[in-house]
Amino acid sequence: MPGKLTQDHRKAQTEASVTDASTTRFGISFQSNKTIAEYRELADVVARYGFATCSVYQDLFYQPPWPALLQFGERTKTPLVGPAVVNPYLTHPVLVAGHLAVLDGISHGRAFLGVGRGAFFEPIGVPQPHPIRAMREMIDLVQRLLAGDRSHFVGQCFRATEEAYLRGPIPGRRLPVMIGGWGEKTVRLAAEIADMLKVGGLANPAAVPDFKKRLAAAGRDVKLIFGAVTVIDRDGRAAEALARETLATYFPVIARLDPTYPLRDGERLPPEFLSSETLSRYCCFGTPKDVIRHMEKLFEAGVDVFELGTPHGTDEAEAIHLLGREVLPYFT
Image 1 (tube, helix red, strand yellow):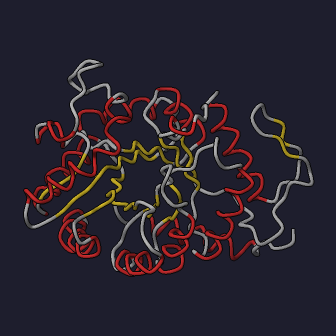
Image 2 (tube, helix red, strand yellow):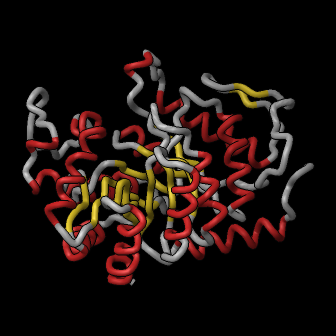
Image 3 (cartoon, helix red, strand yellow):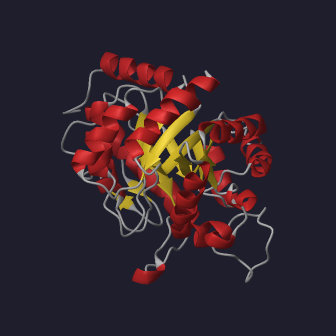
């Protein structure tokens, strides 16, 4: 197949990425709201520490994640890099596959495919029909394109003929898959076909056993990833204040999904009125010691990887250094 990497090269890349990504229990994720120069600086900081994953959000109304991901792919050496997550309603799988082919090449075989239903569609009136089917078909078609498989693809949401193939270098292999979501059907899909389930916006140890139980029922090794707003600072009160401010964007979506949330529908409090204890269900914040204690509880409950989510701190680069120097080493 034109543009394919050699088999030995692909094998070496895959083995290297799997080995490197298994050395830590932390990933890191970013919002797509910065300049390319800022992402280059952040990528150089991330490269100094042993993160398992490095992802960029594709939240609606922000920048596409791909330019930022290319900076992380090029300037880091070990983490798996990918979007968290693309959805099957606004971007066709052939475009996702094209972006991932470039990312996999520039990262030397470390790209992953992150897929989820998506959110914040109401202001643009885009429906989200058949989300499980749409996510499954998106994953299948993206993998077909990246593997160089030109057989006909006939789904209910997407179709492709033998003329649908990428005209450029491709990985020539299956990429690791992360499915993002909370719902029972989404978790079942992840248990069936994914390598990782990311429960985004949740940092509550009490919620972990249910997700682990549902994943274990499939009899496959699927990593459970929790990820949430993370703010670390020597000043614990400043960290909490920034966590509350950041959570405001995501809380309307998260609160209606969390089965452990103590209030009934119609009684949802905005983040500024939540107690510190309730806030910690959806954020990880505080001093390095506070963050370590929170992570201990999550890992003891069964989380495999925690993705430290944006904004990390008032000075993001300095906050990542603080995480890398004082939190990650504690768990090695």
